[in-house]
Image (cartoon, rainbow, N blue to C red; front, side):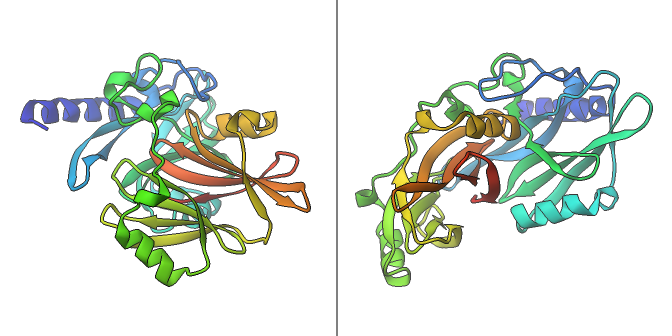
Length: 304
């Protein structure tokens, strides 16, 4: 990134943060495919690492979009002023996170109606909206500066996977030997189901072994962590993502604006669906969400 662009980014960063404490724009529902145009006062600018290839990264600003009701204001607060439930939620769902910015949202009469916590998780920004009691509401949408107008992404940008076309699956037969050797030696009875690459060229391997697991490796094939997605001994069947229930897609669209589904699984016992596991990407962070047989949300686990 050249000096002139860095200087311009700094100006945008200062401007966005200055506007962030003023009145917010009237809220519109931000769901997958959203084309709302946020005003400067409805965005929070944060620096983010933009990995373009293995071993190559640059830092630029992305904007977290938080649209609020008429007359509401967003005030910067200390992390210690957040309700304890918010810190507990972040600790559970984003282990090892660090706080970046924190805000309270107040009505025109000064009553707190919610909170926003902007954190860094695995060197990536995540903005999370909570209600006034500290309960999770949604993960806030992110956009690059040039995409604040319109649909919120462009081809070649950090969020280009929102077009639903970009393929990031990797054939199991071409996984790096370091990964296949580690899995074979460490998780000897795993059955590999699917593999994905992330924007930084790291890998997520989905496997089953008396449960469903996601195992993460860096771009050199070094083991990072293993996450248990489900612990029951059931049959895991790949699900057609176009055949998910309305309750599942509604929850995803509300809680994770502009998400993209990477994989969906039905968990079957004696031929009957017991639950669903949906793996999504939301603003460059991967999540695995579990829903019960009726499509009601059960839990979420952050993968990477």
